Image (tube, one colour):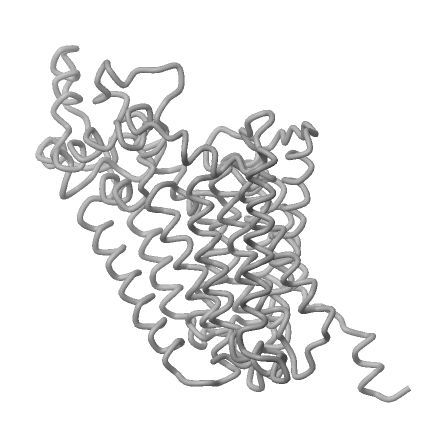
Length: 457
């Protein structure tokens, strides 16, 4: 047997790749919720700490080539959370905006004003800081991977998205799957996530991964293209069945971006056909499936769009309160993770209902509300880096090595869109996906010879 064939059969994953697979599998099963009290958080953080310690003790030295911006941004986020837990002298703490009611409580009880941390709800801020073990563990394992192993990540992630879709289809068929690790809603089509919007975003990311995977390598088998675009259609149909209104937008955006990233590769594959054939077929199939789904009363997302009542939507009703809190607490904020108890303290009676408003449903506003001016500056820095790196990736010309950076740019774009109306980045599974996408965008995952990647336009 030739040595090249023998080596292909004897592929041995490194310790870092095995640990990353274990971590992603754990996150897929137990990391679909953002609430601090769910059982999944215990499992996620325990496994993350174990993986992190094992990787530090027994893994290779990490390569920081190209990944420094990701490490710096993640380090600044952790530093901000930890600084908010440092106790401040009473005079300094009382000078911070929004602390008056707590200071009056101490006076009313006859107590001396104690030293208090910057955060109004330090327990929530400590939980926010603890949650960062997931992206740190993911980043370390990525930096330890071999160049050829990094090229396996799109297929690995696509596999997790596909399995999530299958779980969602089972739920869609009426099967009751109770995930004890997340606070899921019985009967909801949300895969392994607690929130159907986060599930829809995960499927939309699959719509980006599938085209890149289909045209990976010098030789693109026809079956891979058929499988990839079949998955894209299934992802879209599952998004329709999930009932996520936001998922419709990110799903369609993902398909357009996927077509854009693989346009050159598709043109080469369909060189003998007229240029309009493939887009027409894809558009026709999508339109047919959407029409059939809608006519059979299965397109729950579309139904919810037409049934939307702005007066009953807590996102719009709670926005004035969120903006008022933002003005009252700026420039220091309430402390990371503090939104829920702070909103309850300010919530007007006309917004009271059996359920509670757990997040601002605009993660950018919530970050500024919780972290104040430092959080705003961190957001500006992150978006500035994303824009600069994305321009480099998309305007670099036709080069095979730009496929993963463009994929990372597109994934982060989808997460940003979804964060305007929700909070997907707070779930552990999505934290790991964001770190992977950021390392792709930074160029760290480019191998010396990227023959396994599709040629971008």
